[in-house]
Image (cartoon, rainbow, N blue to C red; front, side):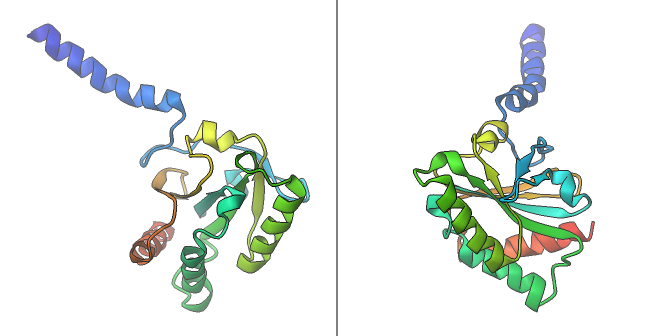
Length: 178
């Protein structure tokens, strides 16, 4: 019986290590760092927005409009309602270029339109790095919320239902006040 308890306890301790080794980002984990470039080949990392809560939109270009309603709600909360402090929050996109048939020139055009619409930064992941590093799905749209210390606070995959918008916005507001 004692051996069984020790074995079970050891397995429980190993689960976080095994999960971390698979590269799957989960709520409560520190997000592994990355380096991506924008259309002008300028390099960015998460530290480019040090001290800010991050909303990372990881997007297959074929799904680029999937969460426009959510992003519109976040922008309204920040720019119109002024309830999200832009000095403490940054939302941006990372395009999953490997998940599409579209050529890179067309992808940059689509991304440029989104960057202007949302007055934000769009970065390019040509090798599906975040699919491997964070375990994000291909052919999809993922939204990851990271606190100022780069701890993952939420991961959403696919279309975010309108019923969740205010909950996520409230979480972002709370995180900017920490």
